[in-house]
Length: 292
Image (cartoon, rainbow, N blue to C red; front, side, top):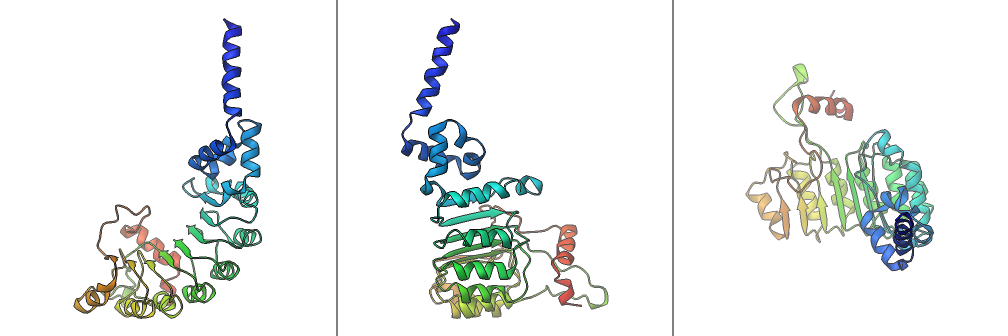
């Protein structure tokens, strides 16, 4: 009985080990980068060999949705390992929380064929870091920045360095302007700086997402004039935009448009802040300093 059970386990182990590399690749691609780095790549020698020596496995690296704070930062070393394993073939890179300028430099030192870059809640990434990455990645076509802390002029800087950009997602959380005492009024804080940067430099843009942005009709008109190839526009929770008759006429040429009050059911992040969190975000973002 015991001998039979041992034989059965041994046979089962060998069946996993003799899987052809292309089948192991399919398994790994379904698991994702983090799972392969943490465990799957060490199941047996053949699996470990595919995980380490097959650069096609690492053409797309997604290190998102794996916690925040210390839970995310423990992935810093595994992220660099994944970049190394791509052997210069990395085309799509997504990171959440742990991204900084040093990591972007590490990325650019090891690949120059990046086509898609996604940065989520990477508050340690500067506008200079993004611009330098764009400068060193001439094939970059899609850039997503969801939540971050940047100075004015970032979008224009990126647009100048990245002339092939086709998709740009620059998202934030909408929060109502908190009371500023005697200077308080009923108008929401407006800012077209980012929109004008897009309009002035991203002339090849096809897809634009500005969720929770402070853009006004002026900025949106500039984008529509400066981006003649634009096909899709998402301005959900960008509540300074007034979709009047003139604005609707200007947007009629677009294939798809998502309006400020449209549903966010298919959006993965927080686009509306409650009153208390709104005030915290407002003061933390530095927006208040611009008004005082």
